[in-house]
Amino acid sequence: MKGVTVLQSGGSNQMELADLSVPESGQDDLLIKVHSAAVNRTDIMTREGKAGYAVNPILGVEVAGTVVEAAGSGSFSAGDRVMGLVNGGGYAEYAVMPANRAMKIPDSISSAEAAAIPEVFLTAYQTLFWIGKLQKQEAVLIHAGASGVGTAAIQLAKQLSDAKVIVTAGSRRKLDFCRELGADILINYKEQSFDEEVLKATDGRGTDLILDFIGADYWDKNLASIKHEGRWVLIGVLGGSELSKVNLMPIMSKYIQLTGTLLTPRSDSYKAELSKDFAEVVTPYLEQGKIRPVVDSTFPVEKVHEAHQHMEDNQNIGKIILNIASAEA
Image 1 (spheres, rainbow, N blue to C red):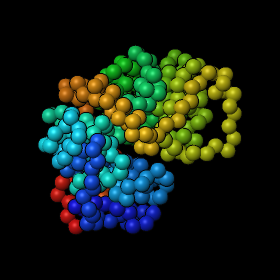
Image 2 (cartoon, rainbow, N blue to C red):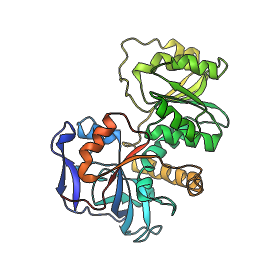
Image 3 (tube, rainbow, N blue to C red):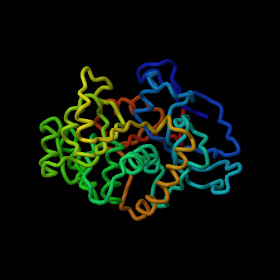
Image 4 (cartoon, helix red, strand yellow):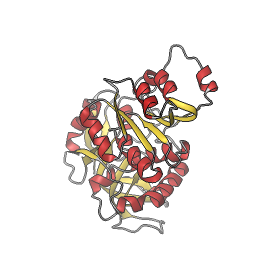
């Protein structure tokens, strides 16, 4: 089979589409014929040698495809269309997926759209509801609103909690798209102080929940934006991971709950339970079209270098997808 590996840590030119052996599936696994895989920042970090938890030499953590072998799984059979998280190996013609985290693809959703679901929707679901405890009609501030996780979080927050959704993004094009997905308050972080706009939108109280992809650069403004007893979930550090000087008193005096999380290095059992809960709650919304995956662009796997560069240029709205089905050397 064909699959994408990394020659050595570095830029996108270090990726190679190579001839590889088809992976062997275990008793509790599914062997998937991969139709589509999605590009994630985790893949870029792995390519650069910055993700210490990556062990599979083939890139890719989420796929959509068709079951080839179901082994001991009683829930799936050969020919079933499935999507889900894999422990690496997604950028290849075949991948192994633990059966207990596979999710059936609704008939109305294409393979490319399905590949746009697992990582970002599970991350958004986890941070909004498992960790963030978002309640009905609360206010949530979602940074990077046009990103993959951002577009998923907007829809989940609106559809499942009827939340007041406040988003930040860096262009009118991105903000307009966020509005189409259900965002209520749109803030251009390049032109506006988002903390001031959040306080205006919440009558000075601040937001109940923050989904923070940025980290250090937004520390002070996030502190100003969050209400007393608010929840703040840190899921990315695009704006840096280190602070030179931190005053911890605002965290204590505002009774803030600050939680950090990552999804990819979580245990197999955690991912399985999260996938099960998400599928039970959200699949009806996907089937009815009330929640939809957002695909920015699709690249043949032979152009994986261009796909990575497109993400690094930060111009995408939603997910970048690789078409794996017809891989060629």
